[in-house]
Length: 370
Image (cartoon, rainbow, N blue to C red; front, side, top):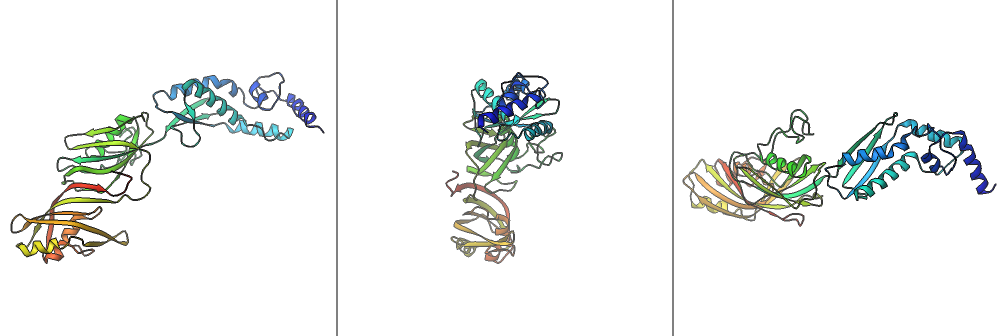
């Protein structure tokens, strides 16, 4: 049988079904459209209404590219599959594919945006029920930032407790921040990110940490942040500030995929039980170039001290300034816990305590940050 004859037979069999113009076109038939459509039950005629809903829902989002998806009622798939099985039709576009393709093309013309199948700025999803009621939802691609912060006053923590209602996921109670408040470095920066991007639940990756009682000086401590569902994405920089914290952030293409190496300059105030003399200072200075070993997460970690300076304040107190690998636990290094060797207490042969410490500078070694 010739291909044209077979095609004509299939098309003639379609006449047994009432189909709308769109569903007929999809199956290659030019017969007279009829309603209600056996397959879509009028859904294809709602395309203009759906497009208007998409335009309304995406209003306020900054984006250059988008991707449209849809969830159709199972009844549409079942009717279309049943009809094609009876007529032995194969390899034709589905109702879902036609609907998303045509709506996507129309929205692209109206908005001036482009379709991107790999990494769209905005994902648009249609959820359609069996009565053809349509819900439009959007999800903006997360934005990532690289920044530094300085902490100007003592008594201010780095991290914020999670919201107890949503456990950090973001809800109405916490203003979709995921945080219990904004009384921390994290809180101050999170609030500024959310305000600038109109996004939700910022997540942070800190390059090290400090005590609540510590200052962070110099260029500040580096960190990375990711904000979900941002409405504003065309930003050059963000500034966050309070009486205790000042931070600047710049957009970056992605978060680091490998650990970022960094070196920290720290000023430590130490109190020792015995009287200190010049020999003790000389012993401490011998730590320059030493490798400090300690147990971390069931493995032995090593941190190097690159430079060290010691100055006696009085008989029992001294100021230690060290340049060392990031991640060196200062209080344990001073206090002489058994799992950290060498340490200040062991070296001096007396109990020593870290009274306080301040971060003077943080130098990033990887090329991913500065």
